[in-house]
Length: 231
Image (cartoon, rainbow, N blue to C red; front, side, top):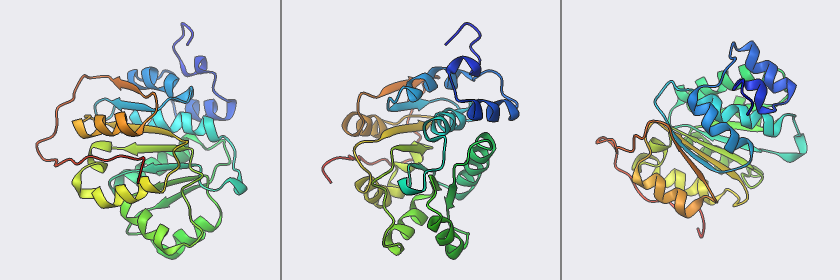
């Protein structure tokens, strides 16, 4: 990055950069400044920083840069998993806002929304799916030709919750349907031991970005071990 340390120094496409500027951002936050160069270069990343530090944009901006244009024949190229409907809705709004000057199609798969409406969105062959694990698994079971094998960019948002026992079976099934040839990002306020174990076994040459050096395990979480390979 150049001395300006602004988004213009990251070599982003104009349609991505102008979306960032229209959002009112000039300079990346510390987590964005540290994580985005690795993400833009294609590295797997395990990133930790406090809530409100800009983690969502740190994953969305490189995703927009990587995909850039709608490619109907490619199918689903990005999967963003969140533990809650509300967080998925926030991510959808943010992604549409930042990506307003791209023609990417984004589909939201969460509970509390019409399944029929979601089927129609999937029929348009979206580039990006933002989902909760339960609703994603429901669609994978219901839609015969729906596949995650072409996904090349996956984001686990609030990964400490996603990799807890609460979503254990669903996450195991989802991980088993993903290709090994993809870029994986884990974002969380804290990175419990189970996530580090998953990163060591399931990610390739990953970069750890721990902004706050907070590796404390929440007392409210019961964690389990996951592996992506060999299912």
